[in-house]
Image (cartoon, rainbow, N blue to C red; front, side, top):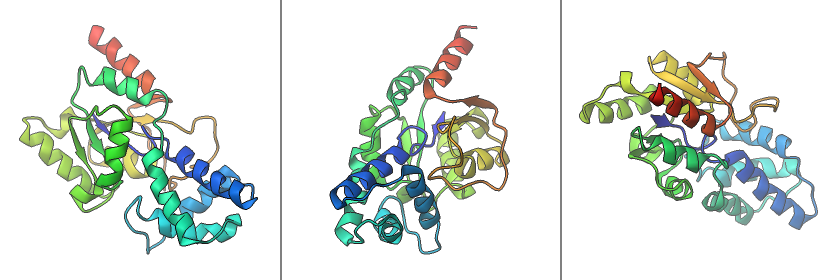
Length: 228
């Protein structure tokens, strides 16, 4: 199983909004979380965007005036550094531990390696292998990212036909994994919420092979399939 990390296993929207709300409280400003995520999404995908999460410093300075927050470089660094404390979704670590008993788990993240190291620790170090933007030189949904992983799997005696790709982002993962011929599983973390939050909206919705609203449900389904 290959996994997106940020947004699927790690609650990046909660991490961003908590930090911005803390800065706002200190400045005497109330921050609307969904509004902040919409501004983040627009800023994150500007042409001048850099690698995530170092790019959070630039993003903060871009969105701070719209949120009436202090447009200070130190606050931008604070948002970037908050990544070290971002939390996993409550069901992520336990579900990964269960899945790792039956499958090789491979992380595929658009985060840099330094950030992934914190995320992996938060998740209980469940991965057989991991690919970051530092390793691939690109970001999903670039097919080249996936090709790096396919080559690794093939070197271990498998093929891309053996992979189930698990992710929450329709734009970064579900659409491209379908086009590349992978089986996929959509973890709909924003179920019950409108819009796409901090994730770019896809041009078209891709119907996944499997659809759950939590990682625990995927682990349950895998165990049922194993027992059948």
